[in-house]
Length: 470
Image (cartoon, rainbow, N blue to C red):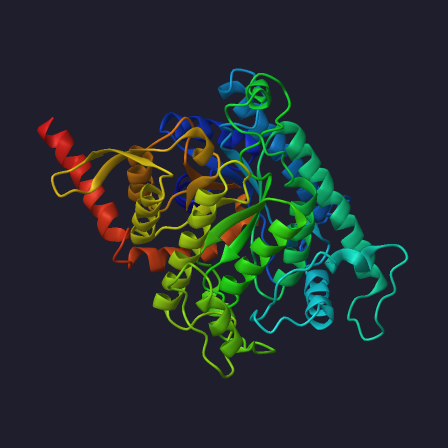
């Protein structure tokens, strides 16, 4: 019963990548894309815990993620009539770094090393923000500080991880499959940020090609994609972290300075219970943060308060404010950089209010045009052009908030799906940690006033009534 109820139908798409393909077909027929995720999560021990085979589990995970890229690309090749272009390919692949190392404790120690050795930025709350020099410690000639918690074995593991990530992303580039790096607990996040930034700097450097140019038209009929409208690599930005506002702004500044496109998956966050019980090891200069934000064109960011705090906001309204303000900032940049993209975004949210504010924000910035409204003046249909559709998308978890997904998919017209479902797959024994987190998050969603259980029940009731009356 558990296998049928939870594994097959509720939150997980199947045991293997191939088993999920029929679901991908079903989603595409409903104008939805997908984020393909081999959902192996660390259970706060070893990432290869319990493996009895000669090949360590983390090595199998690396190969499976490469395999999932091929499966996703094969699906998209079929739906693009064999044209292997970047445009319109809305089956992405998610990576979870703790599954790609022999022991997640290596990422904990690397994170501790980075927090203690990075240049101090008094505007960014713990766990800080990445720097281009973060991976210098992995160079063959690099000297490790005597007080560093990293061991020789850690350095070897991190070098292998770097090579594996570059191999995964090279495959993704060859097959035109977008990669999302998932966020995890803050005690892993500095390490994840470091690799994420390195990959963006390496792979998110598209040539600025206008859509009416010969170069763009050629890219639509060849196997190359010089005018790729979206970043290849997206990182996850968690609005419930106090650092998120300044972390995002710092990353945007770095992307502009270093000449790469920032890929942003903006979410609220899924580890609040664990994070709220951990004090931050340092505090930022809240007065300086307030002064910095006062000079930003976007308003509404929640205010930091002095004193010891956990890494996450205490109240949900603070997280909501942080999310909506960050969304507004990203839409401003999207409006300003039409010919030379600075940012691409996936708004990962189950909050109907945030989705409506984003859609209205797109209309007010001329990123979308209204096609119809209802008698109350609410937008019932809007259209976004190809360029925007490649760089502004929404995402919800498979098995959750389908009424919101349906609303977005039916409201927004575009040449390719703008709503993606996060579809995990894997053996039931491997995805138990994921299912446990979904149960906790579902409790929150079910109780939400916007886009929660009331909408799901209402949609189900309407479907039943339509069947009764024919």
